[in-house]
Structures are given as C-alpha cells and as structure tokens.
Length: 443
Image (cartoon, rainbow, N blue to C red; front, side, top):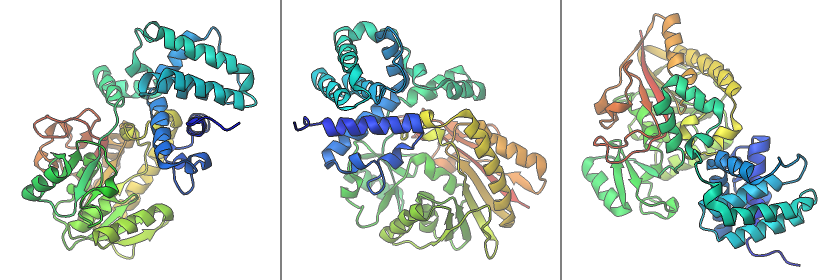
C-alpha cells in the first residue's frame, strides 16, 4: 500500500533529528542537497521546506518537548525502540509549534511507528500519547519554563557565570526565535542603502546592512544575479570594519569560509588572501567572488602548518569556535556541543592567534573574532595574550565604527554582540548573532 502524502517528509525529519541529537551530526550537513540525508534529498522542494521547519522546531523546542513527554508518559521509553522518541518529538513539534492539524501529525506518526520494525511494538503508545496531548494540551503545557528548558544546563549555567542571570535568560529567550536575513552590499552609501531598502522591503541595521522584513528565496531577489549584495548577518560584518581603511593593503582573512568577510575586505579595496582548511567551503567563496566581480587569492591550507610568503599589513582571524552565538540560525548547536568542546577549541584559538600575529607586520592591525558567547573563546584569549606578550596592545572599538551600537562595546574596548542586542542605533530593531572581536596592534 502506498504511503500517505507527507509520510516521506516526516520519516526524513525523524531520521535527521535522530542523527543530530544521538550522533551529533550538524543539521547543515544533514540538509545538504549534495551530500546530506538521502531521503531529504529525494523529496520535492515543498516537502524539503517542511522537513526544515519540523526539524528546526523540534530542536528549538527540544527541552520543552522532553518535559511534555515526561508529563505524558508513566515511565521512560526503553532504549532500542527504533525512532519512537524521535517520531514523538517531530509530531509534538508539528502539533504545538507549526500549523499542522493534530489529526495529520498523529496519523502520520502512528504510520511511521508501524513501519519501523523496532518501533512497531510502541505504535499504540505513540497513538495514545499524542491523542492525549491533543485533548489535554493546555494542562500538559501549563507552567512550562520554555526559555530555560530549551537550553542545556551546561550552556545556560556558563552564561549565568559569564554574564549574570538576567543576561543568560535574555540570551536563551532570543534563541526561541529565528534569525532574520541580512544583506551586505558591495557599494554602500546612505543614499544607496535607502534605495535598496525600499526595493527589497528591508530595514537598515548596524549602519551597514539591510535586514529583510520577510524571509525570501534570496537568489530570486533583485540584485542577486547582478552581484550587488550577499547574505551575511549584520554582526558578522562588524569585525572586518574594525580594520579601518584597507584600500591597497595586503590583508589576510584567516578561516575565511563561508566568505562574507572576504567579500567585505575585497570590496573595501584590499589585496586579500583568503585561507581556509576546507576546499569544498572555499568553492562557495570563489563562486561569490565571481558573482560579485571581486578579486581575492583563495588558498586551501591548515593554519597550523601554512605559512605566507610575506607578512600582512592587516589580518582578520575568525577563529574556529563553538558558534554558540549563532544558535538562532543553528538550533542543533546546543544539542551537538558539550562543555569539553570549549576547552579543545580554546587551545586551537590560542595557537592560531599566536601564529597569526607572527605573520603581521610591525605596526599592523589584527582583529581576532569568534561567533561564540563563551568567554574562553573571546575575552579570555585576549587577556592571556596580553599577559604573555608585551608587543601587542588593544585598540578600543568606537561606536561610530559599528553603526552606533555602543551597547555592544565592553569596558575593555572589545566588541561583544548578544542575540538580544539592538541592531539599530536607536534600538528600534533587535537581534544579532553573538560575536566577540578584539582589535590589536603589534609593535
């Protein structure tokens, strides 16, 4: 008998969710149209969009759904039951957080359990749990502290320790919503920005980006094929701006992929060397350079062993990190990262920072940045560097360099954006990726 419409999409969603939370696969890898989950790749476009929505909601609300299941179940579901728990998660995500009728979500979940050899004995449980949720949703979901539940303890507690309880909660609350789409422009002026904001239906943010008011297929928007702009979160544009006037200077963009900062530096007139360890990710950088009609020397290399032929006037080091500042875009991160990952990454960051400084001319500027909220990957790196080296000083960030976002500057003069920070100088629009950046000068 042929599967019901929508069955394949739900099966792919449950498989992908399971691969993310049990095997720690990145969601972007699972959803890759060339190398990702085979069931997902075989779906038509509209069903792929549904899978993205279901998996995204399941991850963004994972802690909440876990608590709901605990309230609905008399005992914990045994291990080795196939996709039972994943099937329940995606069904609950549809029922509570997406506009899917309960009946459709329940029926397809029951069919899925029946089609899974190991889950089949729990088909009745799936049916009973979900139908009870449908009847008792107000009672079952009452008094849930969703903001707190949806952040793993190790991560939430790290933010309380690093900032304070109120800031930690504000960060977690911001992660309950999706990030918008921000565009960076090859040529920026106040007049040009106003024109494009009107054309695309957007708002000027961070003094140098346009945020779309509605999500769209970006490759179908005006200006894309003409190489007028590229997609890049407004916060991600700020570190490159801290290098100042780089026209004609020799500048390195280290850990360059996916390439937004390379495009910024090239558009500013720098002679850019973009280095990254991933050849496949650098392909996208080269494609965007071609589309934007910009030039850069794109190099595949491991920064632990790679050496430049001559020193640079300026360096932008966007170091590999936990990326906890991008959870709005990547809701899988809280569930695939662990506390011990931070320590391993911080060791890599320290090594790369020292190597990058050795490639900088005396008097040159280096901007170190990470899209992380963890202090070990940000301020702690710079504090340790300043204790060990006397030939480096901090050049404090100024509000006028970052679109007037003075609240994103720390007392030490570092850049620190948080997901709930204002994206406009007047505070009329909020929401940025979490970034840390420090500007250093080498004597």
